[in-house]
Image (cartoon, rainbow over all chains, first blue to last red; front, top):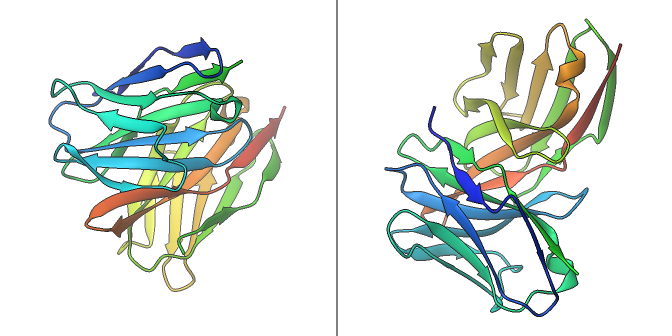
Length: 112
Length: 113
C-alpha cells in the first residue's frame, strides 16, 4: 500500500536554530499539506501546496515557516528560527485525484 | 468559519459497541474522514464517507452521516482493547480552489477489559 514517509521521526533542536522536516509524498499525488499537533491539542492546518506553490496557509504559518518541493519528490517544511512553542508533532499529507488524504507518521519536533 | 467538534472521552467495555460522534459546520464538505491515533504515533486513516452517502460499512466499522444536521458518527462493533486510541473526525472542505482538512479535537476511546 502506498504511504507518505516523513523523516526524521524525532528531532530535538535548540531554540533559534533552523530545522527542516522532510516528507516523501505518494508519487503521482498532486496536493501536499503540512499539519501540526501540539501535545494534547487539535491537529491544525499549516499550509497546502499545489502546482509548486502555496495554495493556502493558516495564521500559524508566518514568515518563520517555508515549504518547498525542491526535486519533485521531497516536500519540506523549514522553520527558520525555532521557538519553544514550535514543539509539536508535524504531519505531512498528500492527496491524489480521488481526494483521499494520506498522512505520514509524523515528525516529533522538540525545541529546547 | 469551519469547525469540527467531538466529545473528548468515551469509555466502553470490551465486546461492546462504541459510538463516536462528530459535528461539523461547513456546507461545502465533500468527504468526511475518521483517523485513529495511537499514543506517540501518526494518523491512521480508518475510513471515510462521501458527503452524498448516509452510511458506509467496513468490517467492524460503520459510518453514519446526517448531512442535514451535519452529524457524523463512527460505530465500532465488538470493541477490543486494541481499539483504545484517539479518534479524529476530519472534514474535507473546498476552499480557494483546493482541499483543506479540518480536524476535530479527537475522542479518546478507552476500552476496559
